[in-house]
Image 1 (cartoon, one colour):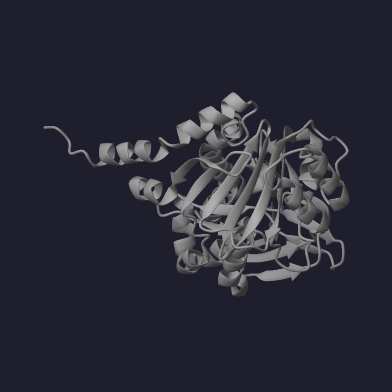
Image 2 (tube, helix red, strand yellow):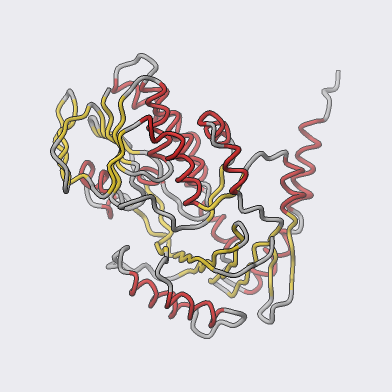
Length: 380
């Protein structure tokens, strides 16, 4: 089958690699002129570790990992009010996961499979016209082509989803939270530093010797927001953090001068079906909750699942249905639990912040208990 994949982020190159392994021909089209590098550090965990190992990139990912030791929670005057030792936590849980800058993950996946597919950068899908046998695709720049299947792996603001399913507003639910991240060219140690005020969080995150700064905050939904309007993004963040202490005034100065800023609403994509005819969706375009960095793991696993089902011998309709059934079982809990996760990350009151900081001290103990439970021998 000839498959067009829109998006060369995390899901797209993973899918292209696994499709090629099963004998399909993949073309990946990416709007950007090269690989994108912005965004938060992301996790490769659970089944995604197996996917990365299958692509031969896991040693590289471990070399590029952020190598975080812990989480440090600060008061407004810079004093430590709590700390979680992530090394102890990971050791207790037996985790093989890694945290890695998103751009490094995307580059590793692309380079592992760039010879498996045709890559077209600096172009995008302009229109889709499908029939029972495939999809006729026109591009913004390139010549029209026909494919047996089109896969939208082009993120929260998916062009493929809009063309095949309808307007973004029909499927994307904004949750009243926003995130902005930028490079932070300063040694920040080995701990993620977190400073909360009610409804707002600032983080400094180490990453291979340097770091990134993040702003996570609750804010009324901005209905007319253009996700490419960087000047407007800077205005929103600056207003949201006006009067906040610690290092925030300095970080806002850096934000206003930044030329590599990621900004978006924390959103949940809700769809009754990810497939319409010979167009299907993968990753954030189908099931985004962009909050804790685990979307990359689910995108990698979903890409492998889709390739497996397309190669299992069933007809295309059955294969796409099986892919969706399998992958919804993985992403469903993440979509349902975003409310709980957001209150851990961004408590709305000072009492909530204090309770969260206290609770985090128990995380390694809980993980150790689970490990002992798993290892307890069966009683005859």
